[in-house]
Image: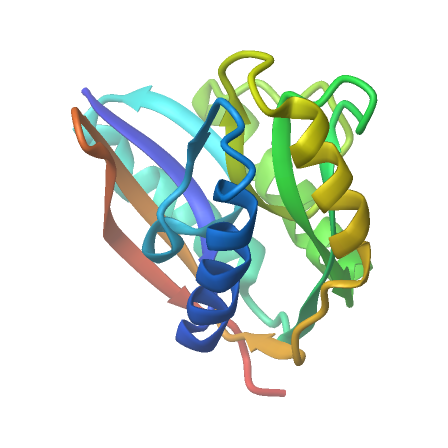
Length: 188
């Protein structure tokens, strides 16, 4: 069994800019397990532990969902928390742009993977980059204040050119991701 998910890799310039934002957020001293910038991605579908022999079928489903889809333009914009700033549990950067097209792709992935035994996500799809998960109340007020201040955070648009099936290995230093399959979108 291998732990897997389907996602979009963000460009390196995003990792740098978000790394700077993370440093500012970390300065609040909040009790948060922060995500490493090099690990950031937009998750389309978390699959969990799957049998290795299912990987070709999963890849086929992704290929079918991606087939004939043009590049999707997205941009990072805004900061916040799930379920909200009054009770933050997950700190995020928002994703804007052609999110309707991204949502259609995500819904198509859900539909194509259901026959393989993957239940559709119960919550509506909301494209975002997870920055960290709160582990307690220490520094929470300061963090929320800074998130409100950073609500205008914005980066240049980028084009989604591929969808990746990742393997996730949990290590003491954090999750380590390896691309198992990279499926390109159509340049249009």
